[in-house]
Length: 79
Image (cartoon, rainbow, N blue to C red; front, side, top):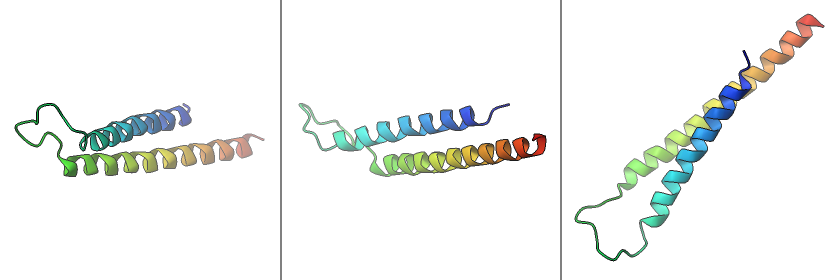
């Protein structure tokens, strides 16, 4: 079982969430033809999404580090 592709998928998913939240926040200040009846963008929800993406990146990087360490130790045992 290879751990690095799992970490890569996690990083890719976190990047997508980060980009989505960033676009939502950046688009919040743009003028609209017709203002929405309610606040259509909850900035606290977007901040939570950004923090979650950061946590996902951290976790995925740790998984990649552990996978690399396990591979090195396995090679040392077999060599």
